[in-house]
Image 1: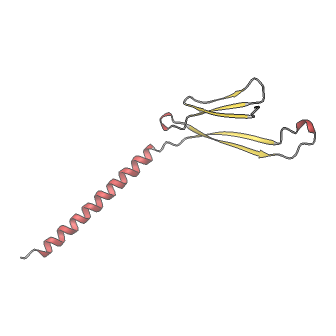
Image 2: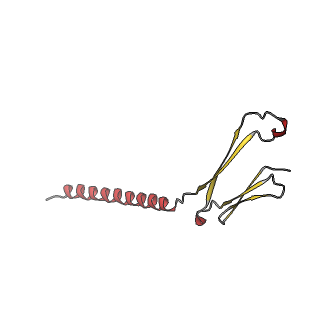
Image 3: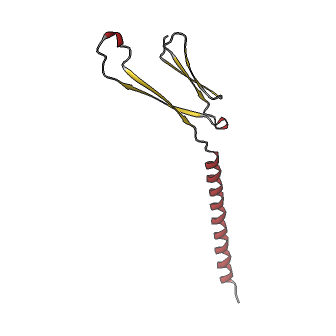
Length: 109
């Protein structure tokens, strides 16, 4: 195998390593795990115009690698769960108030 690119993941900062064959590039990405503030990445391959000489035939594509910070969702999850619980408690309280008010109306004077 002679891969052009290798992608691996780890919980450190990440790095780019050119293998001794001077052809294969290895990208080590930060872990996607939220505890490590991990990263995702965007790897794009776009085709170029066909080369004019056969010696450059292997370079038919442009490659672009862009690291993207992973957005932690813990604060968003806490907000969503808290809002959900608050809404449920509010609805239950309003139902209780309405039932209580109806019972007071039904009581004989």
